[in-house]
Length: 338
Ligand code: SF4
Ligand code: SF4
Image: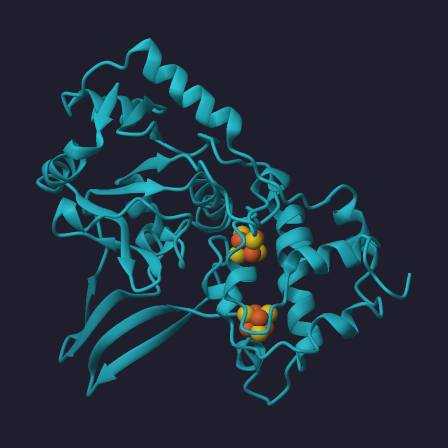
């Protein structure tokens, strides 16, 4: 099947009659996934969005429930969002990140109804990456510019149209309802050519990395990585797999709401105890935690690495700290003290 590019705004308008549609929207120099009000707002001429679309399923700030204290006790009103959604144009790395987040929000110990209800009601329409950025290293992290894992539909830009490939049953049903024309052999060949020429130049060696991290918690190497870190958390807020949060009550008199907000292990207050003790008192401990969580603890817990190689933490770090260089140093490939 194909979608002519000229028809795309109208098709998104059609989708909006049934779904909340989230798509990349140009904001100054950046692209961000936003809930669009018109198909013409979407802009697919982007490499990757500044912030990942994980916020559609795990919002930066969300009400969990509201409460009202009455003479008979507390009355609770749960705020579960069950609206039907489509994320249109999600990149393969970001779709993969949601498969990783599923482990966190749905496992033997915890089931998060807020995330899972949104997840169940959200379709992911992917957009293959024809020109990965210089900071992308997705192919080293078990995904790639044409990876369909986690998607419902994959789109490939073939010039004046997109080739549409249903991936899941839900995606097949969505595509079937859109009344698209069939793709010709020439269009399929154009998509195959695009796939063959998309190259992710950057490689990161993670062979044996977990074993090194298992053994190097006290390695002096951790003294160096954090030196210029500002603790701003831009790396974690822009990471599609980071998922730390804090829960607070926002109350007025006896009525209020319980709210979940993104948090970050890069903030000193994140682990500060009420006693004043902080088990991660300095930048060294916080940087070690960030790296260990992605490349060791997540592997211990879920047998997967919590990084998809999107490169956002590299692009967004104000002091140019580069996770690829940190990993190379840990691997003994770039360290000056080896
Ligand atoms: S650690 Fe960096 S490169 Fe890896 S998924 Fe997070 S933002 Fe992307
Ligand atoms: S973005 Fe850079 S400076 Fe900010 S917390 Fe992350 S590593 Fe540190």
